[in-house]
Image (tube, rainbow, N blue to C red):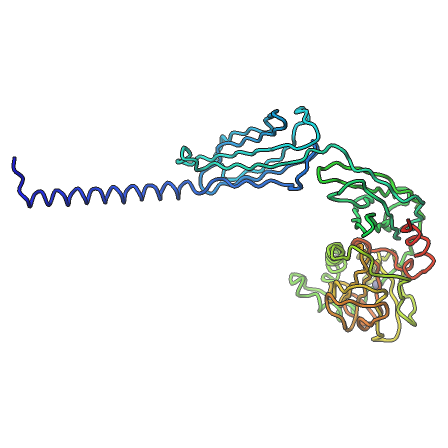
Length: 445
Ligand SMILES: [Zn+2]
């Protein structure tokens, strides 16, 4: 059969068009599959300390873009011994998964290097081509030996609501160490000489018989050592105080808080929330600010008390609040109120760095000075702040003027001392003898 040249030409064009269409279809399909599959699963594992023990709790987070997770296998190997730590099949379609696991004690691994491999697959269509599969290799050092603690000998006389310091050494690098007191954990700081120092406190509301401070040290593998600190807990009576809240006070003071509680109509209702909720928030804020601290001490000598001032209220005062004869609240006064002349210049109680210089709720205009190792001093109700965040101050430098901002009825300085965020009695820190006997004596080698 003879093919006409024109027919031959059109048949060639037809084939080319078919090939092009196929190519477009193929590319389209590939793009569709790739888009449908999304990427490979993402594996996140914590902690990442490089060390582990059987107590270490690993937290695994898996996320898959578009294709549901299929399975996950975790194995641990050491010297040719391979143990399956976790094997999971995802029956229900899910794009994310979190899981906690331990290296099983039954595995009988010994201390030393261990390789952990996590392999995760999703239901990608192109899984045969290796898409949809991720793996993570984690090289760990298995360590089952807790750190050894050695606390500087001596008994710590600690007042209820007061502070103390302990110094100790730890036999190996640690991930976390400090002193636990009930619900509180006071962080320790390693000094250039290698020893750890930790300021801690007996919370004012804790019964002295319940005060059992413990040094805790946890290494990078999660092994923990604890040792009791030898203490003599001294009870302190706190004064009962009665505060009448007159309308005049509410009308003049609550306007600074109306924006915080727009739902409240009366100054009394605003006051109740300021004195409870805002007070709690501000106290919580102190624990955050305490993290911003120098690892070495910045202070020396006794702390300065506002010159020529009279004490108006003490630390730990148990305050009952009354409005028109009715009890509306109960709170503890967490500092010392000092009254001098109005707008008296306020000196920094000791050398340090300004870590707060702004309005702080119930405290009004407030300055907080960091003295290192979580020890901080607080100056509140200031009329004027004359320092800025981050500034270094020396003992006696003027940081502002007394005033009536925040919940102050009259012009005074509310002075506080803070250890690791917890407010403690400032009186101890004004006393040179107390500092020598209870702080410096415990820091001597
Ligand atoms: Zn006060």
